[in-house]
Image 1 (cartoon, rainbow, N blue to C red):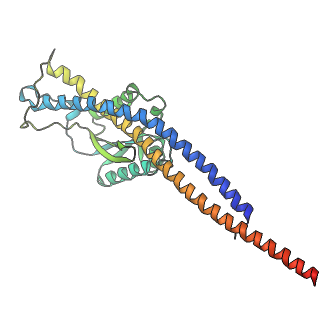
Image 2: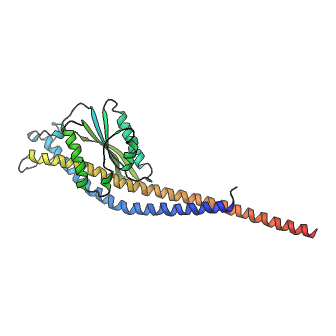
Image 3: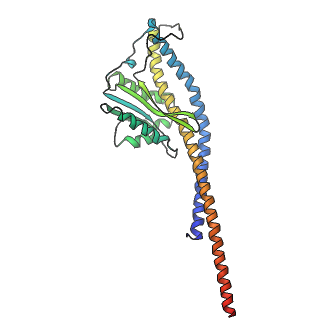
Length: 285
């Protein structure tokens, strides 16, 4: 049985841990609101861009070829893997790495390179895979312009044939307690079939081809930016949930230790009383 001093030390240590996990939970909760607002506002814009591009291609009069829609034999694949720079977020990062490894195993004959967004992804793959770029610093000053800069490099490499396919692997934000790992094909862009019904007719100025040549690159960059915002919101939600569970578990452990401490203290006091009584009886005799 541990002595009383050791038990008090453990109780104090757990109380300090509880203060840390509780503070981290509150910080993540505060950051989650801002991150959630950002992704909720961007999603309709991203979806509308994609809808316009699809409607353009569905219309046989407006069918326009794009260098970002070129289908090639899959020899080289780039995975853009999005995690966080920090841990203590439950399975948030490990689930993305697991999904990445699963997707890589499905393409055994393809050459694989990885663009990492987040230190956790970089640390997980840097020794075993070829890292195309590490863009973990994008979180320091996250903006559409910062994301567009490295996505432009990816798009250029695709046009030049250095990659045949590009995928996004990230956590999609559902709510504070739920995140879903997603794998989306970024390039080549998926154009709908020509026999689909035209949803909306658009009038274009100056012409559809010029507008599409601007919209498609913008849509690709927006898709990556949306994935990163999804990941940021998911990270804060996952960390808030993880720290909430950690605080509850620490509280339960502390309660058990307090009970154990009280029992041990009671036993020690009883032993001391018995020793005093025994000593008194010995003096009488």
